[in-house]
Length: 143
Image (cartoon, rainbow, N blue to C red; front, top):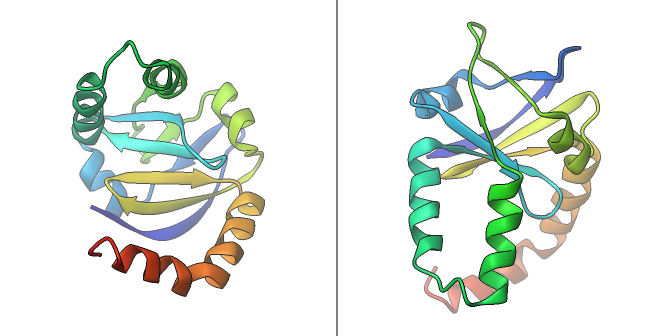
């Protein structure tokens, strides 16, 4: 499980340092892809496998299934860690997420979200305003 928020800088080669706490769960490899809401998702290979298995259960005859698979898998890249715990961020994913220099890594259960600071700050403000409302709606679903 991934928890917490960390700020790091993108280096001149397009690499980011992944926090050591996160790397422990990524020891067997990682997949980076387009996320939702304008961020990137970083999955362990294990979590990626679970997601893949879930999506394979859906019918390919459904347009939304095909579209989401194209979105998620078409933009995915397997990433490797260097000796300093950094991963190379593909240029097309940096552009997609609006990342230029600073990045925010947020642990969210089975994935890490990677955000540009401006997008994350905007979303965090919305979440703070709606936190109680969201919690109430989720409590109706047994959370």
